[in-house]
Image (cartoon, one colour):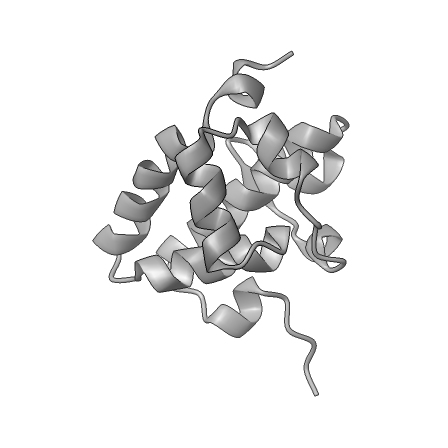
Length: 116
């Protein structure tokens, strides 16, 4: 079991926020990305942050977006689509989305919005 599984999301969230804010993005955009992936609205996300939910608990309660498998690419040198452990893959999906947000990608690309 990876140590990240038992790490609280609240301990990592400020790092995500600092990363995106350094690049000119906002807390609202970060929360939108997290909400898209997990199905959590602002209140539900805040509840999980305040409760000290671990990544394991956080994703156990989440309704993963049906388009999450469209998230591809490398994070920490590992392709997210090839990760075997389902929980680790969800954590890396989140990491990838945060990276894309920080790199200035448009929200419609980050959120895998189908082209009309």
